[in-house]
Image (tube, rainbow, N blue to C red; front, side, top):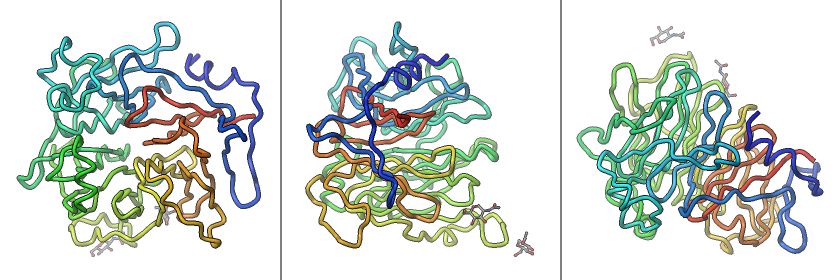
Length: 355
Ligand SMILES: *[C@@H]1O[C@H](CO)[C@@H](O)[C@H](O)[C@H]1NC(C)=O
Ligand SMILES: *[C@@H]1O[C@H](CO)[C@@H](O)[C@H](O)[C@H]1NC(C)=O
């Protein structure tokens, strides 16, 4: 049995609140304590931006501040090193690092996803591009680090079409590196790209360019469209991958996006659950939110929203101003739990959805 699941999903006795009127809202209690919530601390490092489970449902796996990808093996032994992305990474220099100046040497894996057919882990590393590693981990293989002659500068998130093996991923900026993300946001950088990698031809295609801080990506359940979080416009964009005749679109111009959802905070990663719904993490800009009476899902502190395929909010994760969920980069629904990543916190947060 998966130890993490055991640890996180069956050891709770706390009361859990769910409103079933407009949508489900996951709340804290009056003292800012989350219900059915626990934290799994990382070993000395921070920033488990993205969370993945392998083809046997084991994990979670997380990419952290010192460039390693760690795997949760249950306690004990807890977290163990699974893979690294940098070919000249020195353990003495890198292990345990939380210094962003070390990232270009040590690596910074942001996007993680297993191809459930091949059990390979695909990695979007902010500094080393798109990589892949086998089910036993180790040194990841670099697949691609530029497109149309322009090097990736800030590879960020990915998703995989398991039928074709195609990997869809974002390069947030061709100008700013990850450690300068605040500058990219402040300057209104619009050089981000949505890309596609074909593992058979080993070719990379630019699907769309000129995006304002493209961040998370998620394919729909039947792979007919892809969602991209455009952080600096606070929008979720939808790109249809097939035309209405189910013909595969081949020209760049046919990938014109439509707005899937407009948000009031910066969206980060997007993860699809088994039902085909999408969890969007709202990473920052607390206090910016304005109350609109038309929003049935309004709360003071939404840190995650779950959308159906039509773009309707069906569940909300409310941080209630507490510290635990002040920087959620990803919400991954797995089994009966929500696993929450963060680009700055030293833990993975877990909420048990089952009462
Ligand atoms: C895939 O899902 C989309 C959105 O729900 C739907 O519009 C489309 O018809 C589906 N396509 C196929 C081939 O089932
Ligand atoms: C795909 O496009 C071609 C050329 O436009 C067309 O002849 C064909 O009928 C289309 N396929 C389907 C399944 O509609």
